[in-house]
Image (cartoon, rainbow, N blue to C red; front, side, top):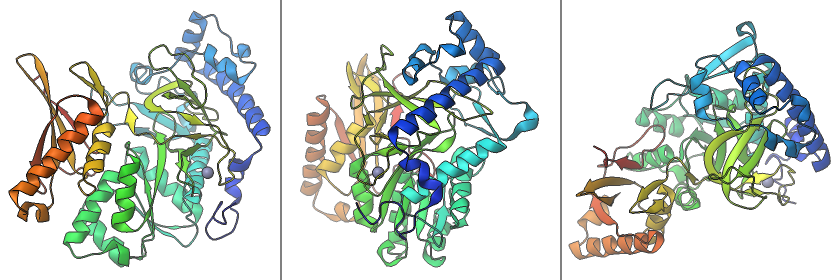
Length: 443
Ligand SMILES: [Zn+2]
């Protein structure tokens, strides 16, 4: 067992004890909590009770964990239809916090937390940081957005519970971020992976070398990213980049986290129950098989959510992790079924494009996919931003690079893609989630 199995400082963090529960005890705890939460939701949430009654299911029908498949799925539409507080199982006098998603279409979705829910959230975020090897004495720059978005405050309270020093800088203002990174002795940063790449590139231009700073850990989430992107980040900046997973509907960040093995994300199974289903038929698939992640909250008081379809595609790893945690892992999520687009009958994920580009040329992570329709035929263009050094190279070198990209995309996707090399800084940088696909087909 690695001496980094829990905490690089070599001390066991007691709050992480549930990460190591023997599996039979963990399953027994999950069943007990599932039964309680189904009763709570049935007795207190009309929307949920109606959906069970329609199917003639009673809370007492849940006798084993596998009986969860009797319950109907829930979707984003369940949250929208009951806007704002229709799924709350606690009176507002017990709700101490609400968050909401920005929602690109229509009304936002609203989520609530009791005091006890806040304790759980703090706990799972603390365990997230411990799994990434952070501890008291770390100085954490939290560049997730503060506000209605769960990322900023979720990471903030977890980092404080850890005893670390938190710098609540929130998102945006890249030059100030770099000044703080350089001057405040920052050892860890939280943000989206694409924003960290933007920070690293801007720092380079400002003459700040991340290798020379105390910064050693990145805790990255809120958007899917690939292992190729992790490699790029780690080589370019000399940090360890850890993936975290969560969603507001379930709690916010803190549903799952990578450990020192960086080989899948442990789900905090004492509070969340994970299933993988076939996204088309809805049938459960066995551990190891790829499908859509479905999550249930096992302890959430204010807003229990059962069998929530995340649209994130992954598989469950049930083999024991080398770190010693008994919690099952999910493979890192590199795509969402929502992000998938269909072009000339072929299903394409942005992550496939990213992996192909990074295979052809390691140093160009800024790209954008543009979909158009000419005379009824779909066209896909990938714009890739080149570096200033490349621009000064001979034209023939750029042509070769363009050919390499075209070939790599052709091999990966089996469709003809137009590759356009664009000048540095022409693709818009995001301070939150990166926008990879511009679909102009129905305009
Ligand atoms: Zn592990």
